[in-house]
Length: 156
Image (cartoon, rainbow, N blue to C red; front, side, top):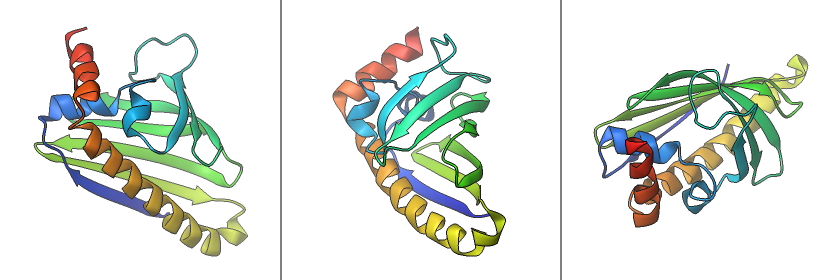
């Protein structure tokens, strides 16, 4: 199963780094170049374990994912519930340590007979997107508006 990982240095403590990563629209769009639309679904008002999220990517692809782990300020994990036809499985985890954020995604393509080629293409595309995304996230960790919104979630 292919795995793609990206690491960024962030100038904020883990609790604030985690909060930035969980910002929602419209603040999310300031730092996340991958997301064109994202919202919590099923009536959820806050992210957390078991909560589902709808995401439309910059490529126009959509996915519903579910938080499978939620442990602020250290990590969060998700799995695809429904998404693009070519993913049999897709999951991701974001970890936060002092001055470092690490994002890791794993996936399996279908149909299985195409996976030797599809996996290589998927790794290349996903690596490119995750690097852009984590760079945007790191920039968001220095954006006064993003930081203010993230700090508000810490006090709610």
